[in-house]
Amino acid sequence: MKSNESNRRDDHSSSYPLSAHPNDGKASYGGRDVSGYAGAPPRVHWPGGAKVALNLVLNYEEGGENCLLHGDGESEKLLSEIVGAGAIAGQRHANMESLYDYGSRAGFWRLRDLLVRKGVPCTVFAVGMALERNPAAAAAMVEAGWEVASHGYRWWDYQDVEEDVEREHIRRTVRIHQDLVGVRPVGMYQGKPNVNTRKLVVEEGGFLYDSDSYADDLPYWTREHGDRPHLVVPYTLSENDMRFASPNGFSNAGEFYGYLKDSLDYLAEEGRRGSPKMMSVGLHCRLVGRPGRAKGLEDFLDYAKSLGSDVWICRRDEIASHWYQNHYPDDLKSSL
Image (cartoon, rainbow, N blue to C red; front, side, top):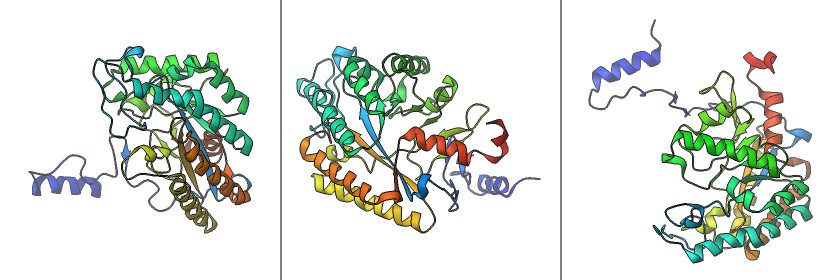
């Protein structure tokens, strides 16, 4: 017997032949799931009874961006002080290169000092090529006790990158982490993926989670690839310092702090009403690593810590481990 969904699609096909599509009426299709937890998320019990799991993500990208010196055909154009910059084909962009260099030379160390002084853990999304150029930064991440997750081998848009190239990049980055960090990455954020990226991540076999999604305020499982559930720990482009480098984004540290505080307050109140969530904060060495912006981050960290046990400030792999231990799909728990 056909399902109601199937019957509706058949009716659409016959009644609306000019606009009907095979995916009409589906909640899950092509790797998308528009219904998610459908208003009934799992009852989450973060460690210590926290109402919010707060994860800071430091994107380490400088030295892995587009540049003729890296074998690319054009200069970088994204996420710098030159808002709206275009790529220059066949030429270097001296200003863009030095703006990126600021991130690895100065911004990274300022942010590391801040997080260490505050006793706050974080997850690094590290671009493999960038990490390989700066072993001192890699060592400092390890010394600080941070999780170093993969941000791909290049800070590229992988939309049109051939599958074999992307597969090699994933494998190459794992090796760079093993050499410089001492362990392989268990998290993956390609950042600018394509529809096949998650398949390659699952295929590689060593990742506990990926973060190439902005679809929820909680982790979730997907079974679209492989024979086991794969965990997605969603990231954010809103609670993110990249809005310092976008039109109508943050213009000063106070706006950044205020937006993060409002987000945390709202999620904490949801948690007090019985529905705890997670919150990611995206950081970039060359953006919030500037002193006038770092002040906003410092104020936010002080505020988050003032909420005490209501906020679990943690690494992304800790969130993933908690989800594996407490929210693994019921039909497969015996296989853990």
